[in-house]
Length: 150
Image 1 (spheres, helix red, strand yellow):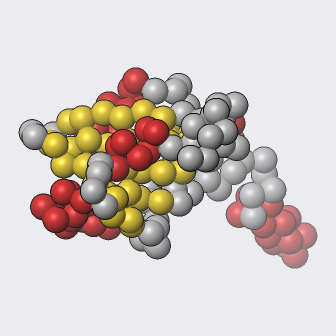
Image 2 (image 1 turned 180 degrees about the vertical axis):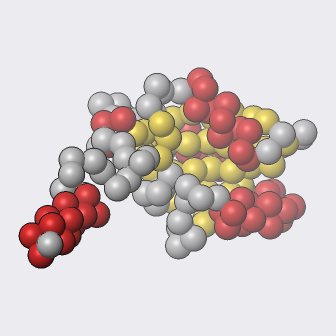
């Protein structure tokens, strides 16, 4: 009887600790399967929102910058995902959120509510207001490969 209890304990320990070969994460992805979004830009436009994203220089062979407009931030980001790369967009390592000045003056709460309720983003991301311009212009024009720092 003691041997049977010891065998059951050993088998359950293997299964519960993950040594059984399966992963405890059901949504695990390799880094190569993700498009890590470095910068997110948000602007209010007539009829909705323009979302702009840029990847970091180390996540893809060449940084990806893309923008899309839709009725809400969620829909604009889905549109970007549909038109962009084949990998899943990953926002957990987003370093910056840029907001156009007119958006900050108009309805910054829309942006902050989106970040707060998003399961993909961290709450500690810095949010910057782009003075005198739009976030999309800055996101899409940043990191010029020509090397010109001007």
